[in-house]
Amino acid sequence: MMATYDNAYSRFVAFVKIVLPLAALALLSTLFLFSRPQETDLTIPYAEVEAIAREQIIGEPTYTGVTRDGSAIAIGAKSARPQHGNTSHMLADEIVAVIQMPGGTIYDINATAGRVDTSSRQAFLSGGVQIVTSDGYDIQTRGIVTSLSQTNLQSDGAVSAEGPLGTLDAGGMHMTGTGTDEYLLVFNKGVKLVYTPAN
Image 1: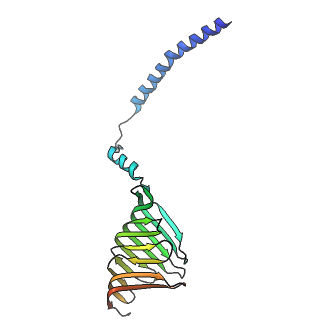
Image 2 (image 1 turned 135 degrees about the vertical axis):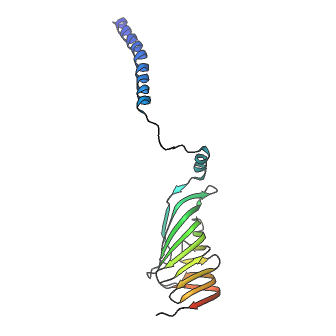
Image 3 (image 1 turned 45 degrees about the horizontal axis):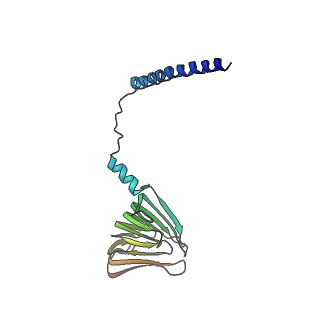
């Protein structure tokens, strides 16, 4: 009985050794016959793959939070990556941020680039920054520093603005909370205002 089993098993193994390679060859031949050349080149250069792996790029990241004095902050970007491998220091491109005060005033902020430092709870926006406020100001500056833990925003350099009073140029700008639902926006370091009376 055992000899019969061994003979059947041996014949099965011999059969498989012949059939499986033939089946694989037939399958490959079919793939080559029906495959068509691709019109687009999807090859990623080795250097680019290496850079992506090294920089750990994150697509469309977002950060949201509420400051101690009740302002809601939301920051989004096209992409971000750790600075020198440190995930608490994120470099970002094409930043869009919104700060909404408890009293209802909204600051819409756009920046070319920036860095979010979660360890010091600060965001540094640079490369040209635009701030549009819901109470009618359109402010342009080189860069700003804003806190993520309390309402505190300061320009990095000179600012130019258009608002309800007219056009304004100043050496700097600082916006901070007063401890209540009110917030103080101050232009300083030499202010030039061209007053435009309302019609």
